[in-house]
Length: 185
Length: 185
DNA sequence: GCTTGTGGCCGAATAGGATTCGGCCAATAT
DNA sequence: ATATTGGCCGAATCCTATTCGGCCACAAGC
Image (cartoon, rainbow over all chains, first blue to last red):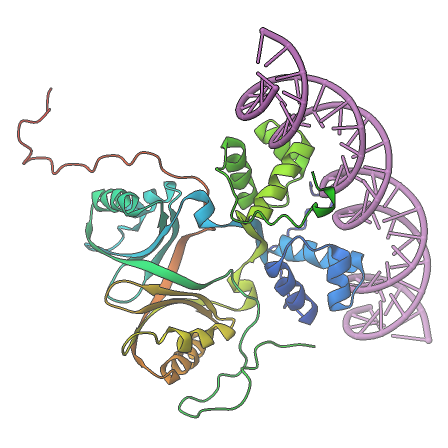
């Protein structure tokens, strides 16, 4: 789908605040992006064209940056998940390390504060492959050491959720109240 | 052939090996699940109905377990990403901790091997909210301590990739000290 | 070797949802 | 009070998903 040349108004950053409708739509689409506009409209109380318009805007503004099929790691032979902490000598070694993004086993690369410099999420076929990947990481100049946390079992793994907890219960008090997750209209 | 049993056939675990077509389709769909079957077919060299059939099978078998809209955390006010390591007293404290999954800020919960018991990926509005969440975690009986790694910047973050590195390059040998193995001019 | 059964592909036809189009209404600016 | 803008709705259109026969290749059986 190409944009009309006439109105090249790229209001990319122009995303005005999301309202309750947008939040709900995001929630539904994160859960299942194959829903029809008609069904979405039914859920939130809008017509299909109105929903279409909003979703288009959410995509245009970047609020939705991708619609992806999430695949079962087991099905593609990736049975080992690990988080790897990487310590580097000095600072600014980041660009070097980014080269490992070319391996499809690497899913995340973050710079973190704390006693480690970079944090990786990697998913490999087996421990042998993890070893191979670690070897590549050590090959990067400036890498001092790594610490790997191999995942034994995953209890929860989901995409970014649009909902936000408004009120955090006061600690220490075994509160009997509900978590009070999201805002609604 | 019992036709009346058409769809009751839950060959969930029956996923026979994925062939090259399936792999390619998975790759394309992870990248962008909104592509039409016609386009997918063009890319991999099959007709639209054939692709449809395969994708349906991939979903049925669980290879594709969800089709989701991936949203920009900034757009939903979640600017803080952190990984939290949780140490618990004893073993089997897991079920208790799973209760925090009710907070939409919690994206992942894993049991890991290493010097920590559980590993969480959490995304909150700000450090204040992270504090609130940590408080909830500490409220869980058996939680000894936590260590949080706050992400300063994310360089890569993507869903599970179907591709697998077939051959890991041999690690580079430390240059000077190598004996007379195979070095030549 | 030849036949039968099965799985998977294709092109064509149908059904269903995405997208477009006017028109209407409310809130804001003039 | 009136003009303007943004956003919604129902109806119409267009495109894509989905279905339907039929064809072909491969494997097991005679």
